[in-house]
Length: 333
Ligand SMILES: [Zn+2]
Image (cartoon, rainbow, N blue to C red; front, top):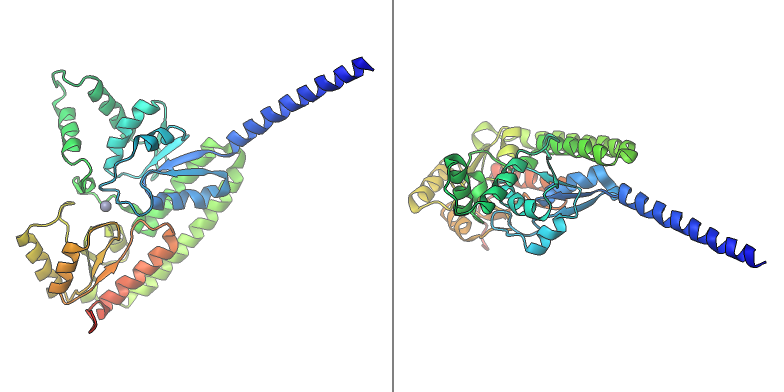
C-alpha cells in the first residue's frame, strides 16, 4: 500500500514537471516579442502576427518621435524583445547605441526588407565611442557622425540626409513593412508560419484595396490643384504615390526663418492652397500663423495613428477636400 502511494507521488511529480516544462516552452515559442519604433509599425506586426506576437512600441501613441527620449525603463523593457524592427528613423541610431549596452545580442532588422539593419553597425560604433570617450579621434568620419547625433539630439533630425523616412504614409511602404514582418516572424516562429502567411495575404489585399480607393478618390483633382501644405513633411511618400506635391513649412526638419516662411506662404497662395495640415503631436503656432496668412484652416493629419488603414483613408479624404477648395476659413473661425 505504502509503496503504491510513493509510486503515485513520484508519478505526479514527473507528470507535473513535464507539464510545466512543456507549457513554458510552448508559451515562449508561441509568442515572439517584436519591438518597433513607431505606432504604424505596430499595425503591420499586428496584421501578420495576430495574437501570436507581442509588440513593444518605443514611441508611445501621442508622443512626437522627433523629440521623444526613451526612459531607462523602456530601454530595459526592450531588452526582453526577440527582435527590433527599425524603420529608418534617424533617432534609432541613438537608441541602438544605448540598447547595445542593455542587450548586445539583440537582433536588429530593417522592417523594409527583413535584412539585418545597417543601424546595428552604428549601434556597435556608438558603443565603441562611449567606451573610448576621451581617446584621440582617429576616425574623423565616425567622430563627425557622433557629433551630428549629439548636436541634433531630440530635435527634428531625421530628415537631415534628405530622405523621407515616413515610408508608411504610402500603401506601397506599408506593403514592404508587411513583407519584412512576415519574413522575420516565419524565421522566429516557424511553427506558426502558415498562420502568418495567411494573415499577411489578407493584410496585403486590404492595403491594395485601400490604395485603389485612394487613387480613385484623388483622380478627380485637376493638375493645377494637386498640391497640399503640411507643417512637418511626413507625407512625401503619399504625395509621390498619388501624383501630388507636398509643400512644407518646416525646412530640413527645422522651423523656417521669417524669409523662408514668407516664401512658403507666397508659393502656397500662388497655388491656391489654403489649408495647413498638422500632425497632432506638434505645435500649432507657426501652422496657425501660415493658415491665417492664407485665409485657410489648420487641419489635423496624423501620420502616427494607431489605426493605419482608416486613418490613411481619412487623411486622403481631408487632402481631397482641401485640394478641392474646401480648406478655406469659414465665417465662424
Ligand atoms: Zn517626421
